[in-house]
Length: 172
Image 1 (cartoon, rainbow, N blue to C red):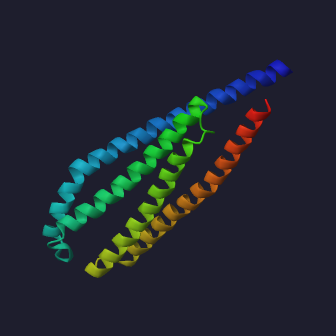
Image 2: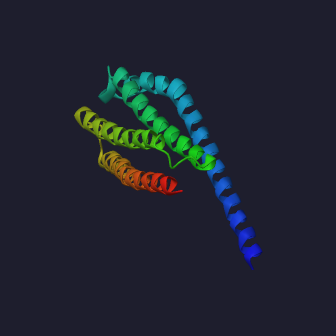
Image 3: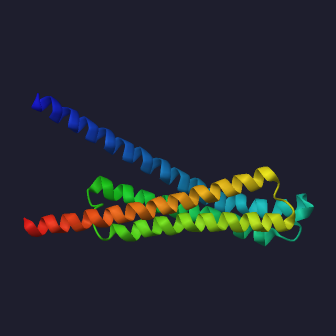
């Protein structure tokens, strides 16, 4: 019975490792697409939108800045998650140095939310924020803010786990 549980435990561990690796691969794929978007599509969009839509005439630089900021915030969020996944795979997550990556994750999610609100404000000034766009941006900003707050909550759990591990190591 014990050996069967032990084998099931290792299977679960293998599944966890497989899931973490699949997540890492997917994240790096998304980061790569973000780079492609950053260097190919954003410059193209920032040239085409002002020439196509009257609302955006003369705003190519603003369009490029907003889209680039959103892409960079998303990429930094993905990078922080990928690094934390790597630490999980190595078994080094419960370490003080992980806190800087958790902070990076919270800051990038917060930044993403603020940038989306700024984009909504700018689109409203341009007269280009229809109800669907406004609701989509508000929803996305709220989701990003929620991720930031959840990340901060989990940071305190991580701090407690680090303190407990240090206390345990002191006893042993």
